[in-house]
Length: 147
Image (tube, rainbow, N blue to C red; front, side, top):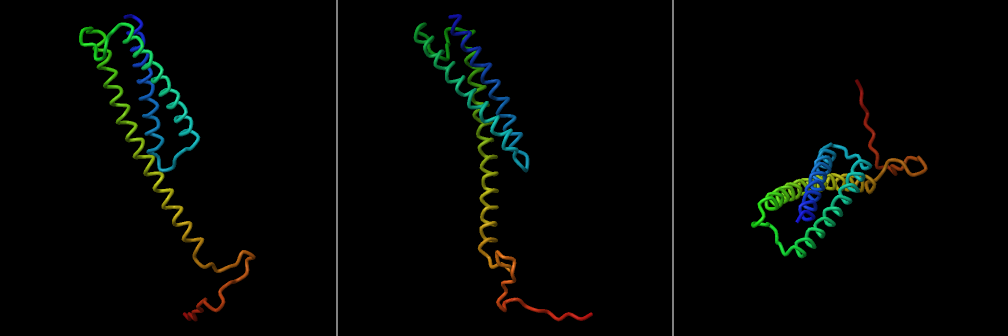
C-alpha cells in the first residue's frame, strides 16, 4: 500500500510541475512576439513531464493490480484524497493546455495572414527589375504640380 501512496505522491508532484510549465507556456504565448527558443525549451520540458506522468501512471496501475484496488479508492480514505487531488490537477492542466492551444492557433493564424500579405506583395508588379532598372513600360503616370 505504501508503494501506491508513494507513486500517487510522485504523480501529484509531476502534475504540479507540469502546471507550472504550462503556465509559463501561456505567458510566453501571450506576448505579441513569441520567443521560439524559450517556447522550444518549455515544449521539451513539457514533453519530459508528460512522459514522467505516463510512467508513474503505469506504476500506479501495476500497484492497483497487485493490491487488487481500483481508483478512486473509496475504501481507503487517504488514497481517495490523493486521487481527488490528482483528478483536480489533471483537470486544471487540461484546461490550461487548451488555453495554450488557442494561443498557439492565434499566433499561427497571424503568421498565415502575414504570409498571404507577403505573397500578394511579391505577385504585384514592381517598379524596378531585379537588376535595379525602371520597369514602368509606359505605365507610370506623371503629374505636373505647380504651386
